[in-house]
Image 1 (tube, each protein chain N blue to C red):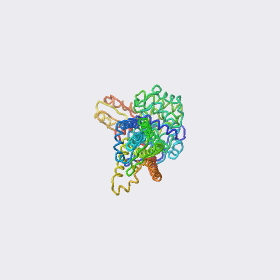
Image 2 (image 1 turned 120 degrees about the vertical axis):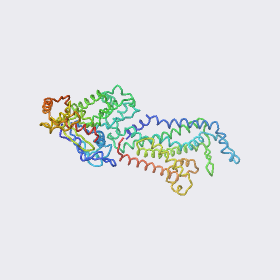
Image 3 (image 1 turned 90 degrees about the horizontal axis):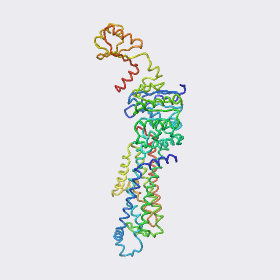
Image 4 (image 1 turned 90 degrees about the vertical axis):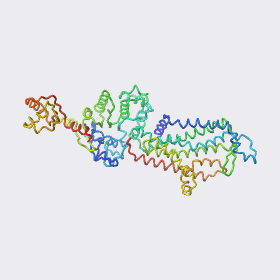
Length: 279
Length: 306
């Protein structure tokens, strides 16, 4: 199995499209950081204007942690496209290129082949989120330094001391990885159904957008199905920036996301096992 | 050739919605055979081959390879099978060497530099081993296809139209390679083609299929060297010739007349006799073209796409 995963990882990283995600993050995140460097103080001042009437803010509030928190908030909805770009191509890309014929005529079970591909999708997803963490948190700290993290919620404001933040980011990025793995699994399943890689990429994004819209509309029917939509949990990494942390809610979210991964992967295995290779 | 069956196909069928691509096909390939699998385009050759290498599942019927059921022994069987299925597609963004190395690893075989270069040399690609496959011509990809099929030294080689896209020299090289593999390495080879001549040059046994069904099966020598020939006589005046023939012993042998072309069903010995008869009847014969009946049949189904 390790050999198969190595082969798949090698193939992924020999394709140009794989680097689009890494380059996009490497460009976009510093652009946001530079904008924050120029305008950040004023924005922060604007955000906390009401509070400044009751509190006196001291110290470095515009720090690497805050920048990273803002970036994670805004990018976690856009990263799925970069994930789908690779995961959606893993099976359909072989069909398009006609290389399924080479793979499936080898003495390897279809289950092992698809599992190796799935693991490689998961590895790519985690590397991309890790890259996001390195660029946003690493460069953020380098440019802005460290300090207390001010988190403004709908009904409260929480200020975390600087020694109490890093572990929250580690777990937060871990959770973001998990939600991106669901996206990868969905794109992977869609990739097993068709013979053209564009379809799974577009379909994955269409499903995510549709789910987000359904979750946002305040209609009773939609609100009833909301807990079953994985998109509802994509921002649950924020739970690690609560005080106290709601462990039960986090575990529930983790289990729901893991369930989605298992269902999507199981369906992909079933489809692939039954599939007639006609390309 | 031996009596040991390498491939046994029993009542094999494949239905794609309303189309039955393969219909109740039965055949046996014996150890050491170079087995020609012949049929016009769309006859069901590639579908059968895809079932032989488990790319698609049969709707009905059984496939046994090396005496084992393919469905339940797929991995064991594929360890000893090398195949090219339809056009040779590879990872274009990787080199020829890397493609072969990856496929060798998947086949759990020796992927040392020496072995990979050995097979690339066998197919004449050793000088291009570093080149990305996307820069290869169709013919070069076809050769690389052969290399990947031979890398793990399989006992059974299944080739789906391996000379498609090759120039005459390339076609000859592939034929020579197949004969070498059969004669020297004692491999069993299953080769499909829609060109009878190609099969005749390399195969010892063959089957012709059309519309997914067997038409004829047997030894190439028996099927193609039969004494039943279709002979076309091209004459100066077809009508005049026919009137002479109608009053002669040859009248029953005339099968058709199209302009100045008369087609007869004859044996080898009868050709000069009929020729003499026509000349003695003052009919000028400008050409005599004998065609074996099986060849004629195959030409008919290929041309008409029946």
